[in-house]
Length: 50
Image 1 (tube, rainbow, N blue to C red):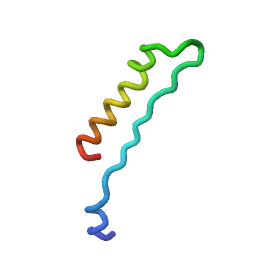
Image 2: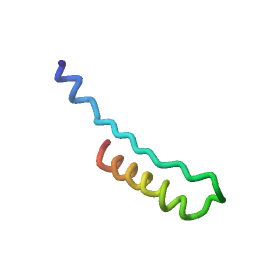
Image 3: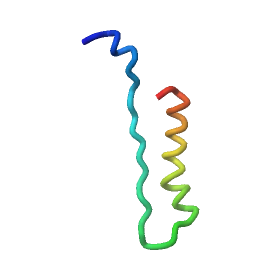
Image 4: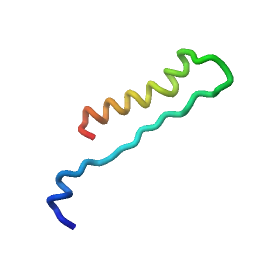
């Protein structure tokens, strides 16, 4: 293990979101329940340096 390589490495985080069901039109509920929480978490992690 080389300690100089460990200093430059960042933790990797994968944020995923569920796909909406295909049984109807896309509406605001899809954004609020699937895409918005993943977007908020991604922005927060970027802010924290991940």
